[in-house]
Length: 398
Ligand SMILES: Cc1cc2nc3c(=O)[nH]c(=O)nc-3n(C[C@H](O)[C@H](O)[C@H](O)COP(=O)(O)O)c2cc1C
Image 1: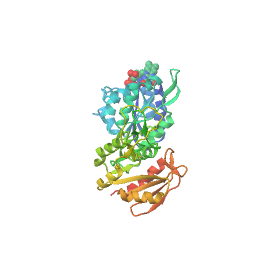
Image 2: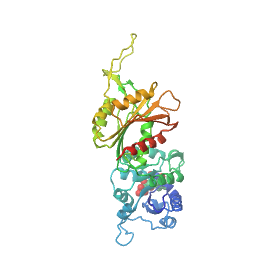
Image 3: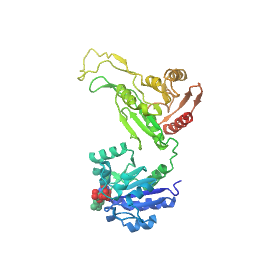
Image 4: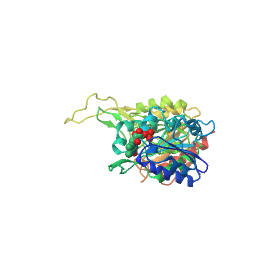
């Protein structure tokens, strides 16, 4: 529970500032301790007195006003926080944080904290979709900041679009989730690969496969939830990047994926290879778009690097987990792969079963370990499966 946890809530200058009262009130009902920091602009929308009354704590606005005896506001609140939340967050505060600007109490406190930071943006939809604001959000996400995507709806300015502050319920749920995470993977470095690879035929065409990346992204989400430092290397997918990653490396081809894996695997303790790396690539990539003709086209393919086999040789004491997706002889092929690639266990899914494998958000799998034990699982969400895979990995950790 969030009882006695310290939440520092930053409120910035937007119309949705009044909704912060409900966030504080809900957190107080859950018995959390809430310290509020308001920007000067926020005080134009709602008074510190209101927040002070609801939070039952002194509200901090001015960086140069001390909170108590010898307390330096931004440092004491930065240290005290189990979680720092900014709701609503203006384009301005997002821009400042993304660029290392610390010129008021809130931005300075965020810069000084080691606690996770959760940001709930709220602004006019043109502001929210502005490429500079989006680039700032991306940058912060890449630096481990958590975001709650705003809703689409009627905005205070009368426009309808994306930018409405997420509901108080969503924000409080996310706060609760972050504060109550089981941290059994805290400090563990996990590398996860996800998605398909694309092997170029010419500048506009490629060979790929039906992997959606959902399994790898779900695993990354589950691992972050449990406190792991997650590096996600992803082929091209249409998924939202999970919050809280240590590092995100987008790649296209099998060769790029191999390079990205080799660049970082040394520092990893656990490696989970969910990516569906293409087995073959065109031997030659045409520099120009290949023109249509009447005689057809033959493309010569060659093998791509076998990343899993290479890692199997180099793994040392690392835990290495692979996936097998087959349409026939599942257990036999998966078992062979487990041995050949020197894996700790393999997650095998039968692509012929409805609800399993590529594209869908669910999976039906069997986990085979080094001793040949086979554990069968029923249909479940990829997120649930991700948690089970982490539990199995935990059993292998010393
Ligand atoms: C009536 C009014 C409403 C505003 N609403 C928003 C908003 O919802 N989101 C936003 O990013 N900026 C909004 N602004 C602009 C911010 O208040 C302005 O960028 C300010 O400098 C933000 O300061 P802060 O980030 O320190 O709180 C609004 C301004 C006014 C006058």
